[in-house]
Amino acid sequence: MLNKKNIEKIVGVLFFCMIFICCSTGSGLNKSFERQSITASSGNILYVGGIGPGNYTSIQDAVGNASSGDTVFVFSNASSYHENVVINKSIFLIGEDKNLVIIDAGSYDAAVTIIADDVFISGFKMICFHDNPNQFDSELIDILSVKNVTIRDNIIQQNKIYVGSDRGGVILRNSSYCFIQNNTIIKEDDTRPCWGVVLMLGSAFINISGNEINLYTGGILVRECSNNIIYMNYLHHNYEGIKTVFGNNNTIIKNIINFNDQGIRIEDGYNNIISQNTITDNGEGDDVDDGIGIIGGSENYISYNHISNNNPCGIRLITFEPSYITYNNITLNNIGVYCDHAYNNVISNNNLLFNKKNGYFEGVATILYRNIWKGNYWNRPRFMPYPIFGKGLFLPLVNFDWHPAKEPYDI
Image (cartoon, rainbow, N blue to C red):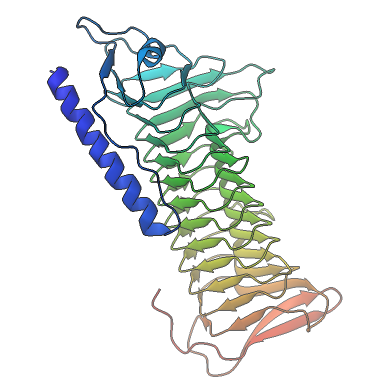
């Protein structure tokens, strides 16, 4: 049976774990990713939904009476809470059990809107039924122009979306140094467009890690945002897994991305890193269904990924500026690496194994405008140059890997 003393112990442990995990995750991946830590304070604890004296019946009422540094602890006794909570001060909002403490946003507005720095939310199930044809906003958690916000260990479930566009389960606008961690983000299986997590309006230094996201139009969308980390998420059965548009210096690392129509798609981005991901079983054979697609941009780095069973392509490049494809296992795809009207890219030191076509290019005007293939392992040891056949604008062409590897790389 939970009592005040036990609650205080739980809150203290959550403070410690949150600070340790968030700070260590950010610093370990990117030295420039420095978080201004939320520190535990001697603030008061306000209770919602309990049976003792002084408990609030409304989360918003408790938030309204809290001071910066306080904790609002919500019991499951009175769940569901039919509210649209607005947090305008630096507090900890903690639910007793994420499977039992439900914030039901109803058919209008977000379950939680955050307009203050230094907010921590954990332990809730947030749901909505947005079926209003005149409503454009359809997010469950809306984070607006703030920093140091952590959304951790929640269930975020959109039951119906009428319209969506760039909207999502969690949306961050013009925010920085925030953590979206270890949440289950799920949507009803319908065709209405919506994203699991959206970064927009210049959001930067955001850590999206450890989440499971499925049944969305797309798992994670980064639109015109830079210097973010997408780390160790599980994205499956979405239309697109991860997509960045006009985003630079983002890192996508150690994610599992499978059974989506598209795995990772980078559009017009520079200096992005895609590394150590497992990208399998994406695509249904359409022209844009790929494990990884790079469209425009330059200086993107794809390395140490395991890319297999994607249809039609493991990696598709549509760019005239160099990107670098190195040290990947690319296996059992319809086409391993496809340079689609692309040149100046470097494809080197990869294992290209048992794809129907290990490498292919199309749409290059002359042999002078080509991609560089070097040091790849092509199914078996090669002692002669390996030809990569393709199709020019007018005639068949061939590129060569002049020094193919004699044994597979240990990746």
